[in-house]
Length: 274
Image (cartoon, rainbow, N blue to C red; front, side, top):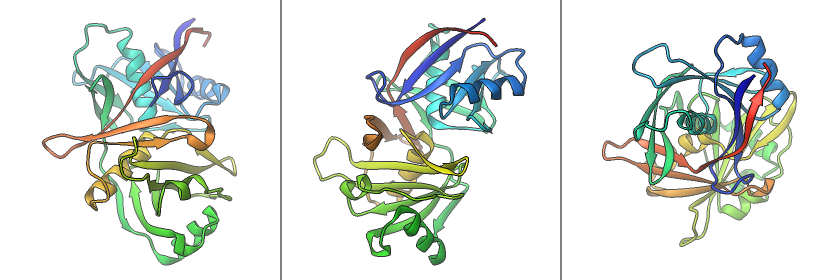
């Protein structure tokens, strides 16, 4: 039996964020065993904490969707760190996570956990045929799309900017095929949140919507900040259409690094047989 937590991320209210299943001791488990458990939980991600392989890290994590292993993902990073901190009460305000993508720095920022946004591996404009295809997937007229950019920090995100938050909430996508699409639109000035965000991607031939997405918000932040469409700090809202109330806190430091933060709360504790 192994200690287990289910942590809700990007919310301080249980069951309104994005959950991640965390096995606090994954030592001795094979990849097949980890994948089987992730498939069984049927959550967007399940993680397994392991001893680090380098003295520069506090812990190592392996991250699995129901179908594959990921080198990095945002909300599993914050949820895994939250669970690890429950076993390390004397930990400082800076934690280093080892994962498939390397070392990720996590900090406590304004009482929340935040990770440093990874660099983009692809950026820049999207060619016209793909923009037309994206409009078809989102069931939008081409004229409704304000801008489109590659904002890929690993999963393959392409970002679509719409006129406002209401336009984002109205989207009812079709088959995303092999596209990972993030959609964003501004809330009115003075609103508690600056942007409404939604994330769509394919799973087993169907299009799913992610409740709250750390990696997408990290890549969106780089684009929106660089183009002057928003200033930091700001808050993005995600998950509204799914009945969630995710809040992603975006900030920058004096060196220009972007930090993606959120509240985390444990919803389930216990043990699992693996």
